[in-house]
Length: 463
Ligand code: UDP
Image 1 (tube, rainbow, N blue to C red):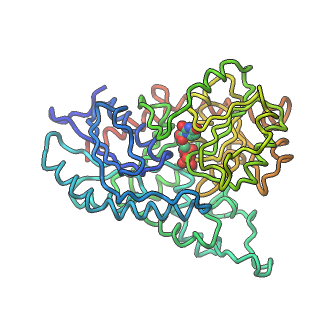
Image 2: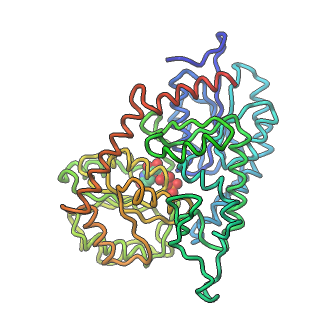
Image 3: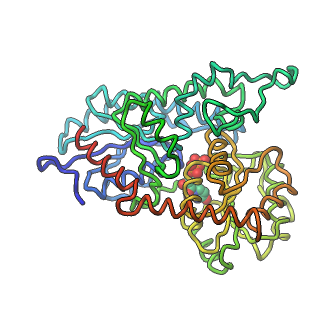
């Protein structure tokens, strides 16, 4: 349905993604969705992690110089590195974006309806509004995570972030397992950021993203009503801007792949030869890293489980180890495992041979696992991942979390629990299938997310 014309003039929607894989994917999925509704699309993007324009011949692409800044590779503190880069990108892009947007507006080929901008790009959202372009903020995390962002100042005031260095007496330490009573079902350990060193920068990032949403003409969020009913209700009540839950975007959108790395499709043939629901798929996303010793424990746990596995082992995942996998791992798992550096994850998860997903609980991966109806083994690393894992294990009850030190015996036991016959695997699988069906319902005709997309289209046309 082409719903994007207004008095015969075609409407153009502008996009500006944050240049990380987990933010680029949903932004392009949303662009695909609106393009299918007849909107013309312009994508502004940084030169760092620039998208492959050849995948989208119908879109206009406008590169915005970002000083070539890239996060320092191999920094074990991913939060500090990433947050620093987001700040730098906001600053570096501000002036060139203003110039490019002003020149696009002068062309006046079509009416520009709005800019859909990642909520982490407050400065660019301010630029657009300054030039008279309404903004819609896209949040690529969960509704629960954004609710936590809005509650952040209150949580700080109430002492949830009063970290003490380990040498201070343990009686003054925060109990990491204590419930965050203002924000059930979070515990202290599930809140974004758990280190004193990163608290200040995270606080700034969070407050800017809340401002970007509250000053926008609406929040678009990649989730669905049946998945997070309470968190969405709370955002709708408290935010003061309309909230559109249009996820899972990868299921709704006809978008081409926006993968920044080449996906190794040969692993799909390897999966074809495996028994149904037998394979554990392992991936820690595009940013997380772990000490080489932890990765070795993960590897030996996978080896010891005796299960077939497919591991998307991104270069850079293991800090300071090359090769990443321990000596002897390949020989120990020969014939029942495949390791690739980057997989076509959505297709892998949808493959009938895959029976479980070991994930770092990035929000896209979590949603993709939910849609595939798979039980999940969670090993969150930073940011919103601990909160996502909490929902997987405690609210939806479709997974188990590996907490504390990574140790091969624990890994082996957790994989057996997830993949094995009997409980708890049977219950996890049953609930995961049910949740997958609910995801399918929300993207079907008259499903909640389809209705939300219709409302979003009307909203855009009314801006
Ligand atoms: N992904 C992929 N191939 C891989 C691993 C991940 O295409 O081998 C995709 C995955 O499908 C997801 C995105 O990369 O859409 C990662 O986003 P997520 O929010 O899960 O985690 P992040 O990378 O932001 O930590």
